[in-house]
Length: 332
Image (cartoon, rainbow, N blue to C red):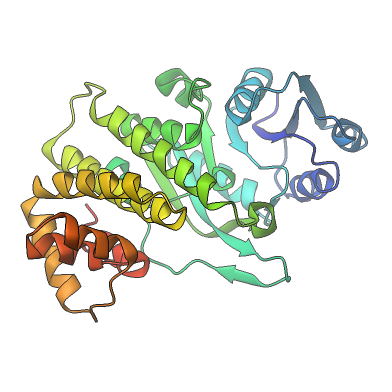
């Protein structure tokens, strides 16, 4: 019985899936299996994966999307610990051994995550700025920050009994929904340093309409969580509403970029209504905005016309770079 199952969902990735598998086979951890879920590929992806032989196992299925592919891998795998790798990304040396050692040493944790590096198309490798990484009950922090990537977290198999599988009914953000459920129910540890490499070239600049649609589904997911009926603490509910504010704000920003001004104004109005309900957050947003040069982004210009109060204009002065800092100020 393998101790670790590495699940690699893939679709038409014959040109890169071999590199992903090789990065797993090069690990110094003993007793692991690699489950490659071929999600309806029409190229030679399955053949490229099968060429490795044991411990790589290829599981074919009809094309059903990332959530269905990951769920198939979870059901087919046998390891005590489960982790994922996107088929065009890479594990760094020692990634599995370090995660297993941590979970063996710290039985109070249900999962452990690490950081990741970013590989650009031109070969540059960049690192994310260190901002402090929490451990334990991290639900509120995860609402306001991306703490881990799918490639960088390792779970005990019992986690799926506690929180279920990926929700295949969600058209987008099914991974974030699962991670929020995990963080809501489980204790999660942090493993210092980078454990995986994320390739930027697979995310060629999407169209503005697609970016707006992604933001739409992010808003819908956050609203779904607010309406879920879970017994949130006041601090958790406040973090959810702050996450909803920034989701609306980014949605409006992308709508303006896509030339959908009327929809963008409505999204800004919704962001303003959410902000009105959190006085402390609102005052901090105003203070930070007043400390910056008044270089209004497009949503700020529209909001200035849409509403009258000065604080509402100030909230929208907070651009992409400073909104991250604002979130840091209010990290639970």
